[in-house]
Length: 253
Image (cartoon, rainbow, N blue to C red; front, side, top):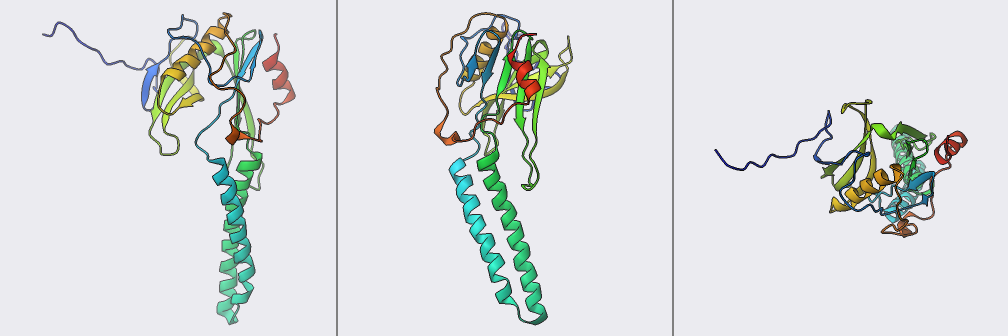
């Protein structure tokens, strides 16, 4: 029998997140790493706001794709009537217009992502209320419809931290999730993304530490790794928060 055994760490929550790597210390416990954020929008004694910038979209490529697809759709629409030769010609016109519609829809989808989608989709933590607020923008494939904005809020005491690794081609890297559990249990009800890093878990551990320390009413410094906004993310900022959520998330009870 071996003198020493190395037990492989196991996730604490049920059901654990896919491709689980690490559980964070509970948010009311002492944190094990120095607290620091990569991005910081607002910090005061009542609430903290940080942006969730994404690296999965090449914004210049989205814009150019939208423009090129627009020209292609116009080309199909214009060339259709010149294909008309009897009954067969009407079918060719119909096919050309159908392709023009499909390509125009793709073009509008790309352009709407570039000009309308909020780039940061922030998170707010209100330590007076001990609640967390998640701003989310849901895009669909139907660009002619209004894409909805939703804001979810949870009691901070029910939130646990988990790190997973994604091998997805367009979303590869480590991801820090907030896992909302039933009060007093480790049974997960829902999850939300807090931050992601391409190559290292360390920054994600520091982010979780920062949020936990702040919500414990301890002092934190406003010295994020990155300042300002990434150039790739201009000019779109987050959509305006609804008045009731703006007031609740930024004020004391």
